Image (cartoon, rainbow, N blue to C red; front, side, top):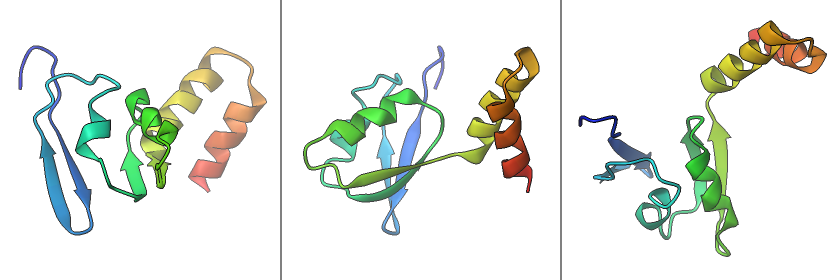
Length: 93
């Protein structure tokens, strides 16, 4: 895809469910994952947090370590944040 749009596919229960969403709006994961419950591994995209607000959620988000580490590294590099440095040490362990 072009023009800054993203293509996605969701892998769960040994199935692949492609998405033709051309934008990463917070609305796009909900209809695609309707009826899904379980653990969903996600990147740092905040739109997935909307899935946790569904009444019938049953979804646990497993965030990507690489994205978490990158954010902690940015905070640790740009400020004095012992908690960010501790997080980096724990990820490295």
